[in-house]
Image (cartoon, rainbow, N blue to C red; front, side):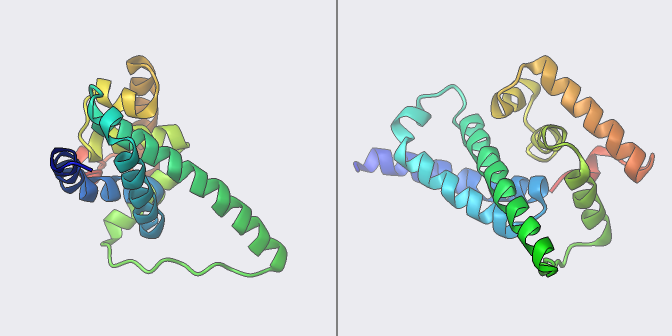
Length: 170
């Protein structure tokens, strides 16, 4: 690994890691899953850095990979929950020091369909524009706008009219 390659990757990782973990935590509501997906994403980035760095938006590639990894963890978690249910055992709840409002927003996001939650995280937490958000999700800008609009409408119904964009920000 040459110095330029390493410096380029290191700078990208330092600039984006905390934002990646934060957005994934907001998306999935679980810090452990967010950290694991972020670490796995960084490994994939390192392995493919030459190719990814040449992309128009390496950040969009990174977030798309990360969201896909979270989806995979949800499939695993769903299977675990079914197993816990069959055994009549409750999985332990994550302890959180978040303020009540933050917890409520996270719970509401978790109740949204995945694509709507993903769109809201991209647009409001990551502060990506429509094009970047669409790239992250692998959808058209029009579809992204639909997911965002429907997600915000659902959140407003769940949380009330006092919901503002600041409610979503990390």
